[in-house]
Image 1 (cartoon, rainbow, N blue to C red):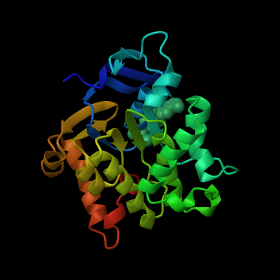
Image 2: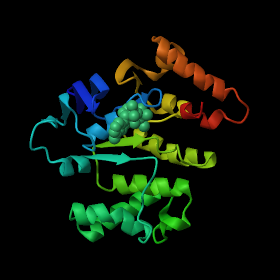
Image 3: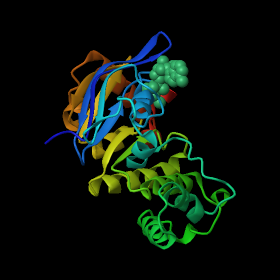
Image 4: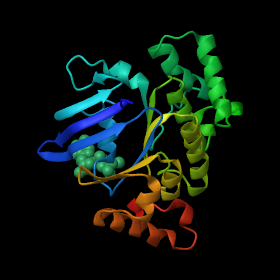
Length: 260
Ligand code: ADP
Ligand code: MG
């Protein structure tokens, strides 16, 4: 089967600083990739390049048969197919939950309100927030706002979802409710690239772990073998830091590399 997404000899510079180095990565339709690696290794940049938020300087990037680095790529259209959710959810404070969700479908996709609204309501139901339709973001917890941000993205009917540390800013008791939404999407067959520091979640959700260090992919493995037998010394060190944090009392559910 041909890949839905393919990075090939992909390079990205910020000035003279090369932050992605000859990245080769193929993602099949329905596959869930978790990208791990120390802070600053290029995880966010990789996702942002796929979404057109950063421009690459070499190599190829294919999505659904299209070479995105070619001139004339309609990134506005690509972004409708590749949804992205970040650590901060940026809901509009003066708009209700429903209006936040419907903004893209109505203004960008020019869909009919009734049809888009029915989808929005079904998605709210799916994430357990049907009763929050008419409230404003400030009336919601961080975990609820992040679930709304996910729904907002899903309501555009993306082919791929990118998640960049979406639970990193949440209080620990809200992490699970957001990760469960992503697990549910995985079960539903959504193609996803996920950056997370929740190792238990990474192991549970991933079809493949991509481990990066200093802009390069060092390992691409199935989660079981990555977590039990990482082949590179860097990945071993990375995981050892997590076991250290996870062994501290009370920290098991929200161990994060950045905190070390
Ligand atoms: P990660 O998400 O793995 O922590 P990033 O992709 O955010 O890493 O960053 C990779 C490298 O690129 C880092 O060295 C970072 O300082 C640099 N970088 C990220 N964004 C920018 C930017 N807008 N301008 C300059 N350098 C950047
Ligand atoms: Mg990052």
